[in-house]
Length: 162
Image (cartoon, rainbow, N blue to C red):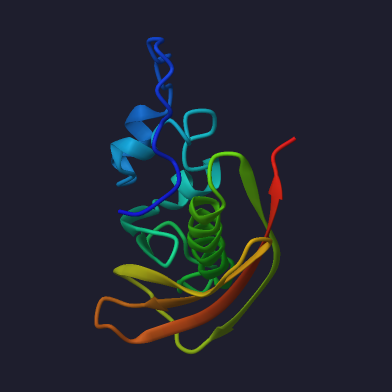
């Protein structure tokens, strides 16, 4: 996996990561745990059951169960599509930004093509643009049969951490 979050050698013992179990369960590689030690993958992403399977700034893949993320009609909630897209696009942008910079979403949109009432949704974020101050990712959500459920686009701004 390619990213900008390899821990810097400090000569000190690292402090225990309170989110280590959450990060491992979510499929986050060990070398990225230091980056996420203060917040884990985020409370909402954890509640939604998002699990990462591939993680690079250019290509990020994760799954999410339909069960528990449905709307009143029994199908995957449209907002759940956007949570998955925002999570993937923001993680990819954050990996591109690196340790001293921060990615923040500034725009997201989605088109829903079909519904899902069971199974697992797979989201695939592909970089459209990885710049110094902006990133844009297209995120495609598919069902267990590979059918496209929705297409989202997310743009993140990259700023120096304060």
